[in-house]
Structures are given as structure tokens and as C-alpha cells.
Amino acid sequence: MRLFCGISLLIVLVTLGWMVYKKKNDVFHPLCFFCIMQFLRYVPTMLKGDVDTQVTITENGVVTLFYMELLVILCVFVGYGLYQTNRRNKIYTYQFEGRYNQKGILYGSVLFIIGVATRVYFIQLNGGLTYILSNIQQKVHMVTGHGYLLAFGNFMTYGLCMILVDFVQNFTIKRKIIFVLLLACDLFFLGFMSDRTAVMRAIMIIVMVYHYKKKRLTVKSILNPKVLLAIYGIIVFIVAMPLLRNSEGFDKYGSISALLNEATGKVWNIFYWFSYAGRDIFVYQHFNITNYWWGANILNLLCAPIPAALISWKPPVDEGYYLSNLVLGYDIAPPSLDYVYKSSFPFSNQGILFANFGIIGLIIGSICLGYVYGHMYKILVSSEHNVVAVIVSQVILYNFAFTSHDMVMVLSLIGYLIIPLILFGKLRLCRYFSKNYKVYAEER
Image (cartoon, rainbow, N blue to C red):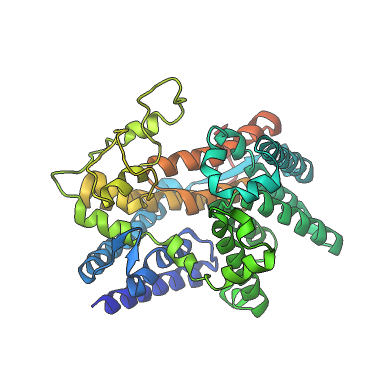
């Protein structure tokens, strides 16, 4: 039965994703991307996983997960369809206006330099690059209190995207070399703290900008041997980063080649890192009408901007701390601070919806997610894939969920992009009638 559920879900996702791809000719269409992410997060573990985030994968659990997944997929597609069929949403188009459109290299270079400078400053604060790499197991201690400083590191990716938009108009050999060097710098400074999520997000944003501004990726082009080799190299790099989190740090391996050799043998770990299967199975089996949270975690979100020094009772932004403690047998709920286990198992979108409001929350929340995807794609397409729209779209596709942690992450990533552009680049999101008649312009 477990094999049947895994293969059936695979067939559903491939069929729906392929239908959307053939109709829209866009691998980054939100529904197509959604199907890809659902596959990565659930199918491999359903087929083969034994234990996932300390949850034993049972046949009954997989069956429950299978039916819930079908419901989620249906509701997301329904939500997207509701947006598309709303006549009011068809009469408007959107445009991003601002100086950065004409001076992409200038604004991109400034953002990139600021991003590099903040990472260099962080390295100096923590004893230098050699010390950090040799003591990477103390990452949590090093980053504590430096969240806002580290967030400026995203400027590197944002700046690189703006530079890329200008470069691809005349992508000479010289420009390609410059871009590759800047990209290597970006990935190094994002990855030296073994932060694989930031690296994956940066790569996807840059690839998405190239996709819309230079050459559309197709299934055929992705299956090109050179592209597959590049993807494999990126996976090895991402797998290698967390291997440094040990008592000896980089000294355990002694050389880059030894580290990469071990990473090569563990490339399948990428599916484990993507997986939400175990924690979702636990959520579906643990929560019921007697212990739903009923939106109590909203307090965690509201308290997020307030420094902990001002309120001693500030709850964690990440509800995953509650989930990890529940998995380990500790009874806890938001906004409590009394959690024994200090590591987090972040909630999936459907997991947090079910934990709060059960099956009704799962249905309504998934429809809302599909509606958000529809509105986001409308802005992306009507703005002619403006670089700001592309970056915001990828952030929403990869990070958006109804958890406090993900909401704060999305607002932070988007805020660090648009606030500087509003202040110094006169960024405006303008809404027009479809017949190019301007209704009004507003800053967002």
C-alpha cells in the first residue's frame, strides 16, 4: 500500500505539473513549481524513508499523508483557478517603475558591495574566516545577535540579479567571466556558514532571472548533460556545507577534495533535507479537536519585531520548536517559552494549517495559497518579468507559508529588497487598466 501511495502521488504531481508546463511553457509557473516542491518534500520519503525528523514512517502514516496531499493539491489548484476566473483580476496590469530599471549595473553594484561588506565585517567580528571554518560547529553562537547584519548578505544576490539583467542584453565573454566571479563570491559568502537554504534560494532566484530575461529553461534544456552536471555539482556543494558541523570543523577533512569526496557519497541527503513527510505524518496523527492551537501562534508572529531584551516572555518566532518537542514527547503549545528540546523541526504549510484548525484550516489555507500564487504570477507576467517581480516571486514560491517563521522570513527578504529601492531608487508598483489607462500608482 505504501508503494502504491508513493507512486500514485508521483503520477498525480507529474501529470498536473506537465499539463501546466505544456500550457504555459514555463517551468517556473507557480503551479508547476509547486508540483516539483511537493515531489521533493514527500514522494522520496513515502517510497523509501524509514525515519524522518525522528518520526517513524509507517504504512498507516503514509496512507494518511497520501490523502491529505491529494486534498492540498486540489485546494491549491482551486485557489489559483478562483483568482484566474475573477473578472476584476483580469482588467488590471502591473508595472514596477524606478530608476533601477535604467541603471541596473549601478544599483546592482552598490547592493552587491554592501552585501559583501557586511559579510566581511561579520567575519572580522568572529575571529576571521579560518577561525569560523575551524569552529563551524559553533554556528548558532556566532550568529546570535547578528540576524539583521547577516540579512544584508541577501543584497549580494539582489545586486547580482540587477547586474545580470543588464549583462544579458549583450552577454560577451568578458561579462560572462565577471558574472561567474561575482556568483562564486555570492555563493561563498552565503555558504561559508554552512547555510544551505540561503545558497539554494540564491541559485533559484538567479536562475529564474536568467530564465525570464535571457533564455527560457525547458525540460529538454534541463536534461542536457552539461546542465545535469552543473546541477550535480551544486548538489555536492550544498551537501558538503553541513558536513563541516562537527567537533573538529574543517580540520576533520584536511582538504577540500576529501570533503567533496565524502559529500559525493551523500548526495541523496538532499531529499532528506527537503522532506516534510515525517513531521506532517506526526501532525496529522497527533492533532485533533481537543488540542488544536486555534491560531495561538499568531502571538509569535506579532512579537517577532520586538527585541527580546524588551520583553522577557517573547515566544520563539519559529513554531518548529513546539513541533520538535511534541515529537519527542513533551506537551507544549504556543506561545509557551518552556520547551526542553532546543532545536526546531519547522512546520510545513499544510502542517501548521492542520495544527491550528484541522481539516477545515487545511482546505481554506491551501485555497488561499493558490490564490496568492495566482496574484503573484499576474504581477510577474504583466510587469514583463521585472527583476523585482522575479525576485519577489521566487521568495514567495520557495518560502511563503502560513507559519510565523516563514511569514517573517518572506517579509524580511522582500523588505530588504524593496525598502532601499523605494528610498533611493523611487520604486513604485503601478496598477493600470489592461488598455494602458493608468488608474493610480502606489508604493508598496
